[in-house]
Length: 166
Image 1 (spheres, rainbow, N blue to C red):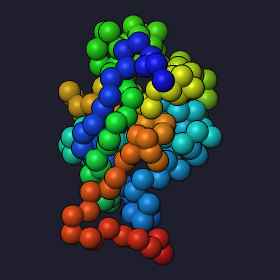
Image 2 (cartoon, helix red, strand yellow; image 1 turned 45 degrees about the vertical axis):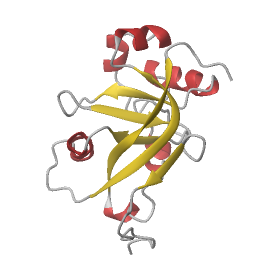
Image 3 (cartoon, helix red, strand yellow; image 1 turned 45 degrees about the horizontal axis):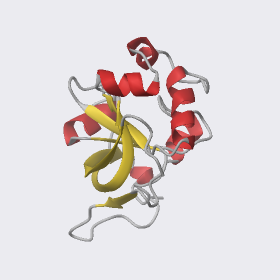
Image 4 (cartoon, rainbow, N blue to C red; image 1 turned 90 degrees about the horizontal axis):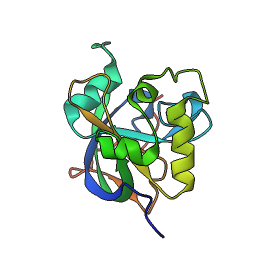
């Protein structure tokens, strides 16, 4: 497969805070599918994570600091991504800074959502983008993560929750 202009292969550890009721399924993209996100319209699953734990926490709490959650880390392998934090990345996908700031919640046709659908169809697995919640933090969204690319929960001590919380 030919890579879309601006695409790089991404392998790294990322972080995500999950609500207690989803602790048994930290790799789920169900919340994003139900409600949509900046880079996915409702009906399309997406896996959102952050490149550092502080950004993951800020994105999850969105200033509701007493919101309980479980910090998880994930190893991402061989994701074809475009980095929107660079001018080159934005130009490669045809988005502008105002597009990145546009309202998306409750929509299915925001510029970022429509561009994400097109990029996914062209074989791009996801995007790196600037956090709106944590200064210089960066996030990753993937539209494919069940291999390839692969996303693996890091659970060195075998403590992951496997059953839904009642």
